[in-house]
Amino acid sequence: MKTAIAIAAHPDDIEMMMAGTLLLLKKAGYEIHYINLACGNVGSVAYDSETTKKIRLEEAKKAAQILGAHFHPPICNDLEIFYDLDMVRKVAAVIRDVRPTVVLTHSPVDYMEDHTNTCRLAVTGAFARGMPNFQTGPAREAGDYDCTVYHALPHTLRDPLRRLIVPGAFVNTTAVQQIKMEALKAHQSQQNWLDVSQKMNSYLQVMEDTSLEVGKVSKQFVHAEGWRRHLHVGFCAADADPLQELGADYIINESYETELNRTV
Ligand SMILES: [Zn+2]
Image 1 (spheres, protein in one colour):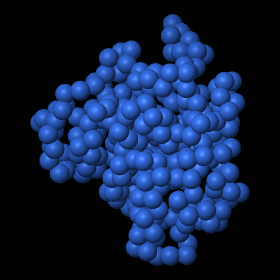
Image 2 (image 1 turned 180 degrees about the vertical axis):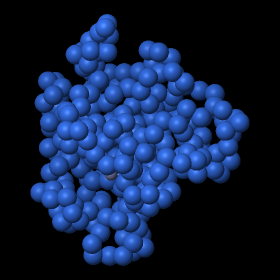
Image 3 (image 1 turned 135 degrees about the vertical axis):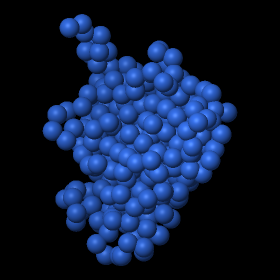
């Protein structure tokens, strides 16, 4: 069976930017997998680290269940996602377990380092899938298969220098917006925390507004998620683009492609 995995930094990041596409991949016949590398322990002013970690583990499990995704437990604390050997070994082990042909992960540049480092870890983990001399933690057998990596849009759709990021392709998530919202609601503890810490008016509204905004940019869909496909070298065939299996719910952003093909 074909498998896809979403690899994000924190509990709720998948629901914010990736869950719609994951749900459509499931409809298209993929087995879907879900992992946040960090446990969410910093995400509270009301509870201590251990308590918060426990609460958020249960919330994330519930969210994955709502999405119908296989849940993989987090491997570190918030703000401790570093690009180091131990983390690469752990992420690579998850990838070897799942054998995904589609990896959905964060933008290579995003508003905070946990996201950026998660992206780097996911990319190297996927790159090392077929290299038996690279040791994963725990040890897992290498596999020979193609894997296509897609990057989600950054939080607020902007890079850390405030520049707008334009996606290379759009996925129509309108039909699954309701389930995506139900999964986000499972992260009950975060609705209050983000109001306090990051002045978000409404946690749920942010996801709704973002998908509507991306839909508007697509000029086709009401709700959408945007993706940029990672360079194929070391991963898959040059023209591999498995999100095309989503049919009419997937469109290429022609202006992005034109920009890519521009000669200097
Ligand atoms: Zn996050």
